[in-house]
Image (cartoon, rainbow, N blue to C red):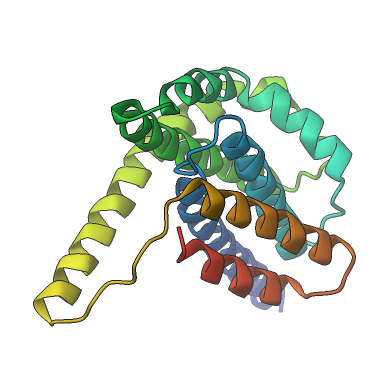
Length: 220
């Protein structure tokens, strides 16, 4: 009987980790898109909103109370140098060629940062932790390692996307047209904030938020 319950607990933990990995992957993809928004500072705002939603979803998976104000404080302390690098890269986005170079760098940094944040909190929750007993100092080195892994993870996603696009091109399927004007970037950022507000107010479910967010990502 004891073995039965232990196996059930292990199955539950494995399931939660699988769900968490899927949430992190989705959030990394979305962060990469947000990192390409050609508006200095606005991309960091969008990435932070994405990471906020990611942690909300992780908290729901592990049945942990979520505190937005507490998470913002923890996030600022944890990410520190990475966010500073994001700010430095944002200088490159104006104008011309710098927009391309800076945009690509921002996409990698945004995705890697989100990956690292997700891995840190998932590991903490997997070990029985919660928002109240999270110790930033004990996770700083782990965060740095996950940030480096995140950059490799982003590159794998890039290769996967390129492979999928090549396959679609070979089959004659036309890829969707991407709008990249400043007006479109403003609209995307505004819609992202609106979706986050609707979720916070309980007007849409997390599943609806995820679907709408993914549809919005396709327009970047």
